[in-house]
Length: 378
Image (cartoon, rainbow, N blue to C red; front, side):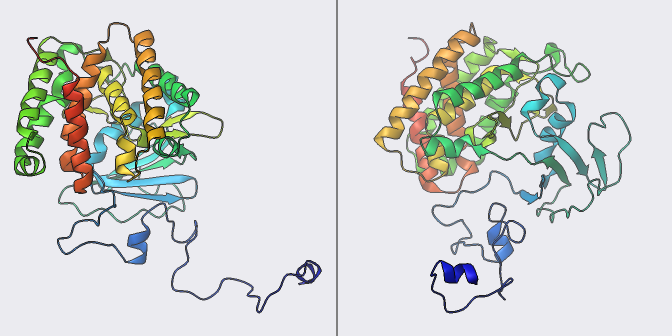
């Protein structure tokens, strides 16, 4: 009170302690970075049960909660099994690039940190953590507790014009380290027993068949675009133009990349699967095409951020840096293959989102990418 008088600060009342309220927004009470709508009991939907315009729908029904220095992620086992596999077998030479796995549970048991071959240990491996409620699912549920890494996503950096060439190169060098890793010898699968093309054509064809009516309604060119992509992917697979790596990330879009204060790079949400086969192995071009996906403005779409002329110029400069990095660090890679795979990603993600503006933007981007590729046979 004396300080307020000395500083001549006017006031009517002073409340000490926490005021009485129905809801407190605070990192220790209702965390806005988790699921504030669920905590409040207010989830906006229109009459058809779809998210309102501007809301970004999750690709899968999962739940992520923050608890002090931990992140707790819960989803159906089908969604999490590859990521859990990756965390349990991440090689030591690249372990610094990923959060530390504290514990994970599948059904009634938990597999503790790095207990790859030992028996499962009971749940509640981390004292004091309250596990989130399981997502609604007809199948088994899995959950994992991870080290919380504090940083900012590349999605927010790029949409805020803060993704500098140096920061992009820092990430690309981390990705190259992943692709150069010898992997985990105990889980390495002979190349003859793994089909690196399983994440391309089978997935795309299945998705298009399930949602053909939606594709045709959204975009009159969708059928011809689908046929063109299939033809390009068929040739890619038949000619075995893969570039195998013992470790790939599987989805290094900018929303899965964190820049820490040090600065260093941390990567999240690894795939850990090729088709239905649990493995860290894969096609390096899959990762490179996901990076290119973000460098074409994907994060502006999902964050509903209008792309101004200056944003487009920055992205163009960053794409040039990426192109030069690929030429230098990935000899033998045809950049046209990266473009083709990126086009297939943009086409394939349409059913995973419910915002029609986003869906149309993906299809428009796909069309532009396809138009930049020389048609087969020419």
